[in-house]
Image 1 (cartoon, protein in one colour):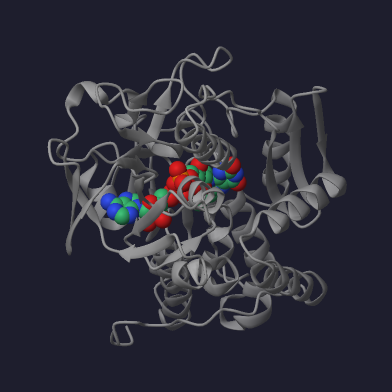
Image 2 (tube, rainbow, N blue to C red):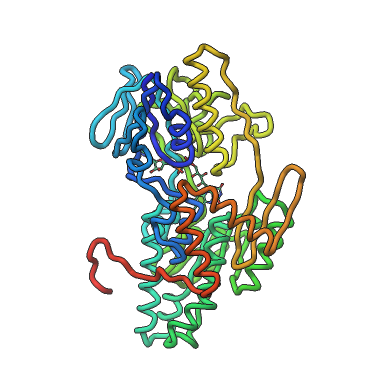
Length: 421
Ligand SMILES: Cc1cc2nc3c(=O)[nH]c(=O)nc-3n(C[C@H](O)[C@H](O)[C@H](O)COP(=O)(O)OP(=O)(O)OC[C@H]3O[C@@H](n4cnc5c(N)ncnc54)[C@H](O)[C@@H]3O)c2cc1C
């Protein structure tokens, strides 16, 4: 059986891993990057806590020595279902089974200026972009004598009060309270504001009320101005506009407010559900297709009794769907009945700052916060990294940052040899 997987994130890589060395299965994994990366920690790259290689790993190294797994660099553009063929940016491939594990992409809800001017937080490239831009703006703030301009350069607005928005705000608050005072003496008396805005009425909306309240209080204490029921409508001429008519003057809008899946030519409109996700049956087969499957963020399945509106777009769903689909391919080879997918929710968590985190566990229903929650967060994220090398590097960096009270990757790297502005 020739299996082609589009995307090597949590879903795709777990599916491929489970099919390693199965003699009757040949797997080709296509990705537009030549590496797998760990999205839950990209904000730590963006804030200079970790360097990119701590949370990424090349696919070819991962597949080395695994005879039935192959990697192909390329971007999938469309599908020809009649010929069982995917069309890539750099060629085409035939399949017996095609699996979309292509995740989601940043959604700007149609706001062109936000797309053009804001800093997205979805990929490793975005994280490096953000690190460069914030550090560059701090250097510009040192140089300007204009107080309003300086304030705009140092003010940051984070849009989106989910885990990413909360975590990046907490990290920036710690950076401002520690590094800015220490390393930028020129800016000691400069005003800088850090805002976290969300269109809903709570931070971390899928988590418990206790977690939402603890997070709000902790961030406020750290100096983050949290504005709820505040929807961004535009970002132009250094002003963020809100639905209620208010504005904030800044050069830094970090966009962590939404994602939507990508649609592919050759998959009919009826096969898509809410959020442009591919609608699947309980075995992750895309509705209206014979041999095409979707797993992870790009899929929406409404057959799981506990999740009638579809599963949350989180790592555990992607991992579990990848593993379940692998099992089903093995069952197919043996003509055995297939397993329907049932999500095992292990809980959710968010880190707010040093020694501060919130954790919710569904069974038994439990909420905890503070240093214990923080240690649980660190441990879970560490063991979830793809290789021992990544775990060791991340642990080492965290320890240095914790004891030295410092992040050390504050280099502005200009891959395009940009001018010093
Ligand atoms: C900043 C951030 C923080 C997050 N924090 C958490 C968290 O703390 N806990 C949690 O559970 N979840 C978190 N999530 C969500 C979690 O990362 C996703 O649910 C998970 O990554 C989904 O896995 P996936 O395999 O479906 O997609 P992804 O991991 O997004 O992988 C998709 C892959 O497909 C590739 N791809 C996409 N399109 C194409 C194409 N056309 N051709 C070829 N390749 C393609 C991409 O390069 C990528 O490698 C976070 C997400 C982000 C962005």
